[in-house]
Length: 284
Image 1 (cartoon, rainbow, N blue to C red):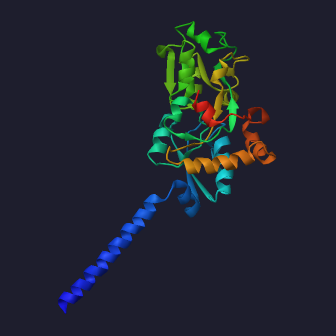
Image 2: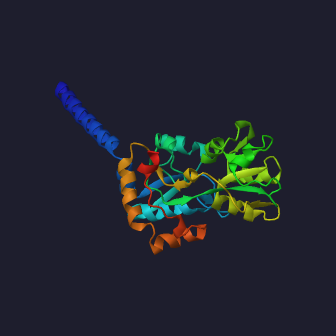
């Protein structure tokens, strides 16, 4: 009788173990898209860089990319968008490590980054400019102008495309002051630790507005057209189904009155729309 009871118990344990294994197998097979649709929650990673993604003084995460994310993921069934603040240079490692599901930081698509993440098609195009001290005393209008004067320093965000773009124009590594965020860029120019800071036109104009008495953006910036930035949401390489679902929603929505009203407060308009695809830019 005892032996029979033991056999029954062992059988039940085996069935339970088999059920648990089957449940684990199904759970591990669930894609990020399926989890988002099942839970109604998505996690976005961002770095503080207005107007693309930033935290307001009252603690709200906003900007062009988080607001686009809220609209698009709502269409995919996500009612809650959690935001994870990350330094710019740690966004891709954080995504790949699973700290969040998507980078929503206005990240430019570049061939090098395409080897590490799966980009959605771009939601905007934009050019760079320089932030300089008031009056532009060094008469800087290009990266090449900085390269010609080896004693000059250029403040760039670590991991941003301006690092490579300035190098392309001949700026030496010894001239680059790599900092973690745009606040540090502004401070570097204010305190004369850097003669200029480089970033997107909208970002640099936003920084200039914070201290119009000391800094300004250059009136004309000459740059290689190939340095035009195309910003997009980024996903883990294995999450192509999520990327494709987002692309479908973006293609239907970008350029509509609702889209333009969503990004308008951050300085974006029809001139920032592009027909370029991530595949085209990744293949360059």
